[in-house]
Image 1 (tube, rainbow, N blue to C red):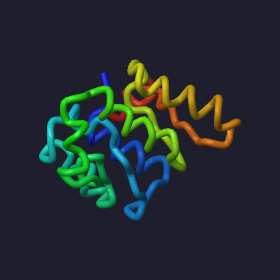
Image 2: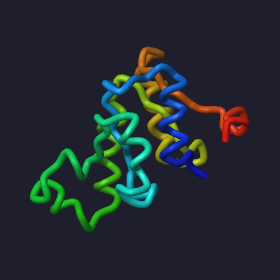
Image 3: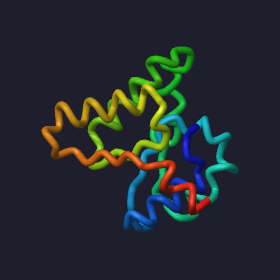
Image 4: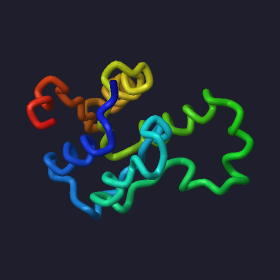
Length: 122
């Protein structure tokens, strides 16, 4: 189960990220829409998704192809300055982490939270 939006905000703050941090949220739909993301966007107003970055005309050709939408997220996440996994059971997160470790030569920060260790905070 992925860490929820509130938990991600708390986690990012604890790691030292501040309000000026730009965050790309892949698969934002799993959180249940903008109202569920409110706590995260309050802490990090520079939060974006592919839907907020692309115009409706730009995203429309991909709309009926979930694998192509996931490919857009993959491209952004593999090129990011840092990547934080919020669902360690996700094949997508594991693929990105593996890519960043293998091709990044240890220079692409990939954060893998210890969910059991975080339980004491929730």
